[in-house]
Amino acid sequence: MASSEEQASDHGYCTGNIWCVALLGGWTALISVPLVFESRALTLLTMLAVVAGALTMIGSGLLRHRPVQPLPWYLLSLSAVLFALGTALRDFTDDSISPLDDICTLAGYLGIGVAATVWLRPRQVRGNYDLLLDSTLIGLGALLTSWTFLISPILQSRTATMTMVVAAAYPILDALLLTLVAHSVATSTRSETSLRLLHLAMVAVLVGDLGNSLDTAGTATIGHEVLLTPLLIAYATVGIAALHPTMASLGAPRQIHPHHSRQRASSIAVALIVASLVPVVGSSLGTVDRVVVSSLSALLLIGVLVRSERAIQRSARSERRAQYQADHDMLTGLLNRSALLRVIDRNSAHWHAQPRCLLFIDLDGFKMVNDSYGHAVGDELIANAASRIRRVVRRDDAVARYGGDEFVVLASLTKQDAAVLAERLLGAFVRPFDLSAGEVPITASVGIACDSPRDPQATVYDLIRDADSAMYHAKEYSLGYAFHDDLRHPHLPAGRPVAASETRSRNWRSNAESTAV
Image 1: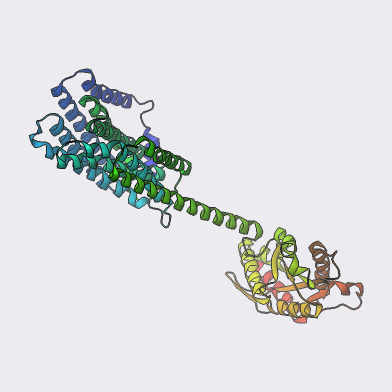
Image 2: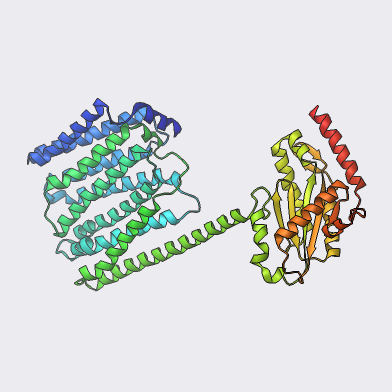
């Protein structure tokens, strides 16, 4: 795919190229011949020349660009021959062989449908059905319009049953082809010039077939030369698409990101407007017509409701994901600082009804880990430390990464229970961390600040400030943990001596220094 796009950018396309201007001019002159000269023989020769030119260009494109998946181009070539044969039998022979022209044309539709399926299959977005639903709704809208203005008048005409059924089948096939084109347009990109040209060719086929259906239904009288022009344009467009370097990517697997959601929604809105006008415009429809129109309208309504529900669910998921990302630290999955400051206000009934303690945890020697092993290992250590802290605390406790190597635990605890929790947190750091760089011993210091329900003026800011001061006190005196209330008596340091922690810190410093050397 990348090579194809590079070729496209190297060779350019049409703009500024003399050969391309000449090619487009030649095609325009050739397609205009039947409109200028009213001659059946000249019209037939023109159509054969256009088909031959398109097949030659497809063959040249296949030989030059060698697409990964050539089957769609072979199918398009076969469809071009079948359409030309059907047109020749219908417009340039008598009615005695009329079934053959319809057989050839219907087979041409089948070839286009299979080709579109082949190039669309690698573009399916796994688990995403919104795009398919939108395309189906657009096709249902087209089918509803076709039934009202094309199919029903054809079925009510006084023609042979087989001829009538075949004529009515064309609008149905057009609705299916429109569904495939809408699906393909939604998964294409601007760089895929060849595919966009094929879309134009498919639209030209739909326009030509619409004219034929209107003529068959008696709604409008259109000359054969005018009806042939969109088909000739489709042949020429397919040929030009085959010469573009991006033709090599048609049918090849690639990552697709559905887009044009607003355009698809606009198309669905048009379909709904048409559905609302059908009962007025088609007020003289019979019982069968009303049943069909009502069924198609009901399917459209159900599809729109399903689409709306899926859009609401997707929006809700996006909102929850955005809220999670706004409230959580992406490295650890813990609450971030801003979410921590709002945690009491979000559940004030829980937090104001009982005593609160805030534990401020800081990792000892973390800077040396970053300096010795790099930030990747430092992030790994932070994530592992957060996991150990999360396993120690209770489910209802608020745990946050306050910043860097600092963590905060806000819990509904008494002072005695907070001391027990601090002991357990320090115990979680006894075992060295098994990181990608090897086993890394690390210790922690914990500062604790508590308040009570009788102190309504205390805020999270106050608890963080007091616990932070206690943490530095614990770190300075190697206490492991300390309460802010005990800082008034510095000669009686409160907490738990951590001689073992000091030993581990000294061992860690010596190991890190030897590693750095």
